[in-house]
Each structure stands twice: as C-alpha cells, then as structure tokens.
Image 1: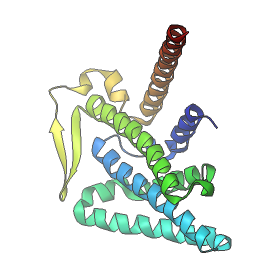
Image 2: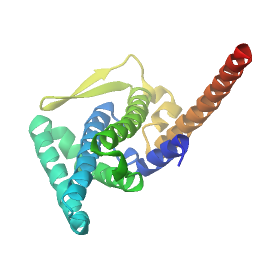
Image 3: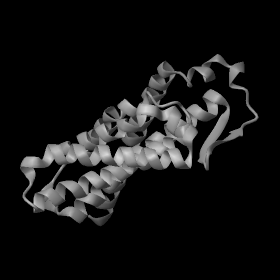
Length: 212
C-alpha cells in the first residue's frame, strides 16, 4: 500500500474517535497523547510476544494490555482533570480500536522492533497533527474559545469573536459540521499533495536535463 493511501486509511480508521469527542482542543490533546502511547505500547507488545513465541495467546494478551492501559490512563486523568475524564466518558476507550487496527494492518516483524516502532510513531504523529488541527478549528470557530487541559480544571481562553453571530461557525461545533470539516481538510490535503508532486517531478526533470 502506498504512503498516500495509508494516510487515507489512518484517517478513516480514526473517524471512530474524531466524531464522538466534543470539539475542544483540550480533549484532542488528551486523546492524541493516549493514542500515541497506545500505538507505541501495542507495537512493542507485538514484538515481545513474537520473540517469546506466544502468538497463540496474542489476542487475549493484547485485549488485556490495551484495556488495562486505558483504565490506568483514565484513572490518572481523573486525578489530573476530573472534568475532562467525566466529559470524555467512554470516548477514552475509542483510540485503542484505531491503534490496534492500524497495527494489525501494517505490522511487519521482519524490519525489527526499533524500526517498526519509529515507523508507527511517525504514523501516529501524522494522525495526531491532523486531529489537533481538526479540533483547534472546531474550538476556535465553533465555540469562540481555545481550551487546554489544566490541573483540576479546563483552561479556557475566550477569543474576541462571537461564533453565534455566524450560523456557519456554530455548525462546526456539531457532528455534521465535523464531517464537513473533515471532508474539506481531506480535499485540501489531496490538492496540496498533487501540487507538491507536480513541483517535485518538474524539479527532477530539470535536474536530469541539466546533468545531461
């Protein structure tokens, strides 16, 4: 599978936790941190059971590991910021589905644990950047705020902008609005990627022509 097609697959896979989560940047930070932690843990876990020849117990051990990690993460979140833990609710368990699916589809034992870990960190990093941009747009234009997770509370910065004055801005805070925003971001990505490919091909053609 090509890199461009992989990115589409990542985004489609993670729609499961992009849509249900409230459109606040603070929640995106919490979810992105958990997602990257899970991707790294699942990757190392796969290689560990491969080395220990426990592949026949892989599904059971994986389920136990990922659920335990989610529960532990949520308990830490309850201590750090109870309001975020309460608001996210069962959404906190959604990234584990995406991390497991992504790793199952792109798992490669042959390249070694370190190389595979770096590759998966790159994949989860791309998805995290997309998620942070997505939620920052919804937070700023949908609610007129910018939020961050804080100790025992949600840190809210109110912007000099009233989203209620424009119905289209409020629309971004809704679930249908989030789907439209995802479509726009994907369209922008595809457009920029095509333009970049054209520029790269033109530069390579000029370089080959100069050398000849």
